[in-house]
Length: 539
Image (cartoon, rainbow, N blue to C red; front, side, top):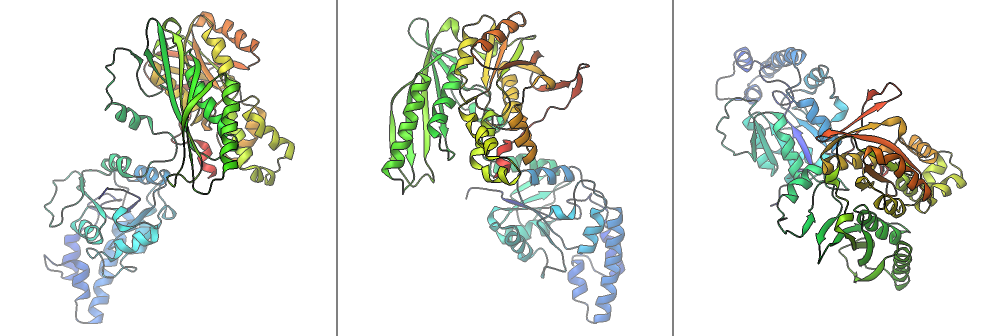
């Protein structure tokens, strides 16, 4: 069975809270519980109701006193926040009472009761752990199958309950020597921080690009020792370049269009052509694989092919072949493009040439593409927020003007001296694009926030929807790095092509990462990072 984590269920005492607060030996003495017998089971087995009631009152008193002293376990609050940010439901299953859990949570700074999709205590679940009932109940409340639920706890009952329910289990030792358990856990961890790599590996990935760290691990499996491979695959690299006969270089690119749009052909052409152009190459030949879901009619196929052909002609490409198929493997039309361009080796622009002091130019404005997509797919929402029909139509037309093509500015840059790198802005917006450029170029970047151009329509759309334009998908904008003495001349050359451009950042020395400053005093300012594109928040 493939392991998959879709929700996480925590024990509470000693797991989300620091261990050792509850004095179980003292509780046993107070209620007369012999060794080898569980406290709850001992109390339930007392013959007289008055004895059971008195013992429960003693237990409750110990638990409430401990709850008042409880503190978050190391890494607990950050872990819960991370799980929630990933969209994973989080729950609590404890043999304690709900009152004690609520009291202990008052001592937490970042975790609140409302963060949990379920709280199951001994008042809610009978029989309690190690029986599987609570785990099965939690899986149902969190909307996942038990086999995709991770049960985390510091005691054998947690592991036994999870295993009996068919769930994944993590036994938390809190840095103590691991005890021998009758039921083997799926994983044994020393601290809650040790859960992070497990969640990263087994939780569902978010939609969009693979995270850069995961991509780097995947690329490490590939052979790149072909001597003709001039630009191998890498984080921040959107193309590959291979030396042909003589001094000519083939630049190759492949990218699919998987989202529904009435301009899929435009996207398929320019998403691929843009990347090829960033290498200084001329995009030339396009192969397109078109996959259509069952139910597609001939008119829909012809319309998409015609759109693709028009966009290819506009970009100066030859649509030279591919494949078409109707298949139940897709739910909507998918275009997978593969594009080949050529450039003389002396004209190949390799991001690894980025050097300290290089200026970074940025064309058009932030989130041109994202603004167009929002207007096209969420026009009704914008109208409800007070946007006029004319404003929405203007944003829709951003697809064509300023446009999602960077070919004009890329050609101007390729013809200019001193250009060291180019990188087009796509998913994750300008923030992610600068991070990728930093990784590919091996240089830390310093961004001047006040210089970043944001079109007024984009600013208003993002403000109305609560989005950060720096993290919104931005095809149509190009980052161009050049030597400092070439920056002003390059800026003029791009303006001459009718494309707006601004100098927004500087390469700040070897390393990776993006920092920012603001204002005439260049006051340090936070630079946002986005795990997923801001557009996904609207879905």
